[in-house]
Image 1 (tube, rainbow over the protein chains, first blue to last red):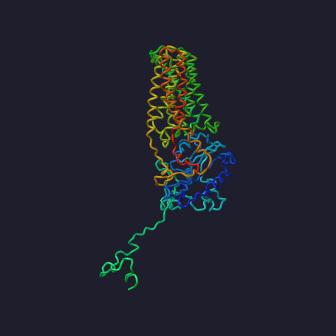
Image 2: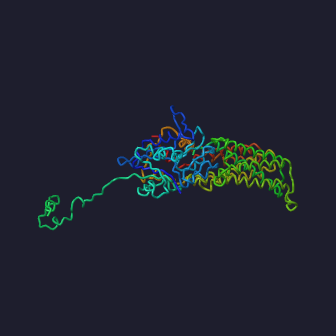
Length: 243
Length: 325
């Protein structure tokens, strides 16, 4: 069974919001109608987005680290938002695991948004229906596009390639390998929602160098020679000849 | 959570309507068993009409919660999985049953459905009322479970939610029935009034139990699990946008701490001890005014109670929306 999902690499995300704007651009011009904004050029602009990039600070100065954190629907394998929907407008596709909303059936009761612990569903104040990330379902299967472009808009827009897209149930796919080999994890595992989207953690590249690797402490010439021994930082025969 | 007035009115109005109907049927059962004198027909017809009015007002209020009220009929589709869908089915069924119950009393139907084997008066109304009683309790269960079934809203995810929806609804219904009896059938005032006091105090005990439970809750989700970084000090620097979004409007109550605490004390006084006191005064010879006022005071208290019920629930998504930055 296929489960399409995004894998987001927090190690390279620079928080540029390109995924946010490209998502909005693609989906507001898509078949499902606009993602309307209210007061876009006035005080308190607000609107519907499928994707947000947030920023967190980890640690206390001077040992702080900035984590940019893109957040969109995680297309859970056990989506708590789906069974609570009274109309069946919210559903999970059997063929590829994408969680979708049928905008023609949604009555706008907001109950599904209460039932999502991640806060990734947003009510469109103009259309009065619940909206959420569709994994760009209208472009990933579009055969009029070149194959390389049959990916979600956010994935194509990311300048650092922090967003990977693929089938997390196929063990050899790029996303599965990334999750397996680079420590991919799910958000809020305590609720058992089994999010399909995964995040790759921040990584530090460090070399561990011990004292013994810098100074050859067990140099027999320095240990066994007759007194007076040369100091450790003086050259010994070992250092100047090749025997 | 942001308390929506549509849902506050829906749950309090139908709760009182269900309770009022249960009170009517209780009196009828007692009267059928000769434990109480039979009340006049007007007690049942006016009572059913009042219960139907409360249920209809609640249903009307619920439409204001919907983005697309014209599609509300679709909400009956997913009764296998959704408690909301079940409520959407049970509420009209109960309304129809209450209407039939009132009509049967109005027409004075006394077909002997159970033959001579059941030597009780009013077979038709007893049967319809019995069905209505089952539906009324089913509706309390549905309404309560809508909130109790969301496991990550820890303040709601407890059997106390269903118990409180049931007890507070029944209590307000019996208080309403006491006021009705004072006007339409004075001999039954004492019976209903005493039950109203008992149920109100019982509801107070379970509601306070829920408050005590919620005060001790430890959130399961933290910023650490929300973003998956293991560090004891994580702060949000930006939620990704400057002004509001659905996430900041729907999941925060936005009230000042003074209002929040004021609501807690308002409902703890208005919904329980004050109506119980008014009922006691009315039963001890104070007349109909304190009995009718008891329902008004208790209903106001329940509005505050429901506001607080929503405001107290802390949604884990709020972890992601802490700082405008």
